[in-house]
Image (cartoon, rainbow, N blue to C red; front, top):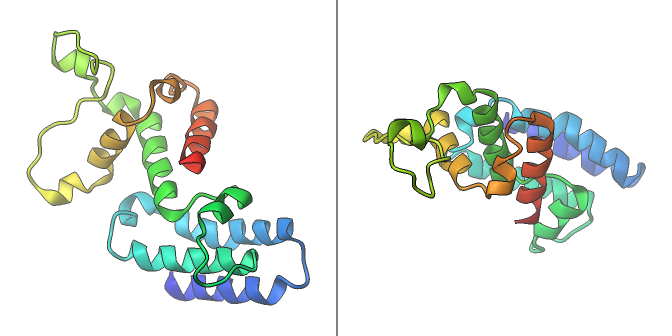
Length: 170
């Protein structure tokens, strides 16, 4: 993956003087984003992801003619591209919403009507491997969403766009 992303970085660097920013973004989506997002639920929480994030920021800086020390936070917003960790969160959220029937809500587990009764039930586990996995992490992330975004969970398209906007703003 690392070698492929370095190749994509080289391609974007060599094409940036020839083509427009919109076309560079399209090349980014097809070459870098597709590689990063493949299986991100499984590797997005690993220590290897920091190296991938550095490569992603390098590509963004090349596309926007930014210096090495310049912050990429606004550059991601301008390009409407999610940083790696936000992409990981979005993938977890989409996994939860697509497979909502696999999860229990707190109202099913406990009969007391609390303010968190509409949240998903997070079972107690002791293994860090399970805690860092997609199932457990997805529940944590979904429960942290604002209620207005959770309300879109029945419509996948609206949920995805609202979640992406929320992650781009933050």
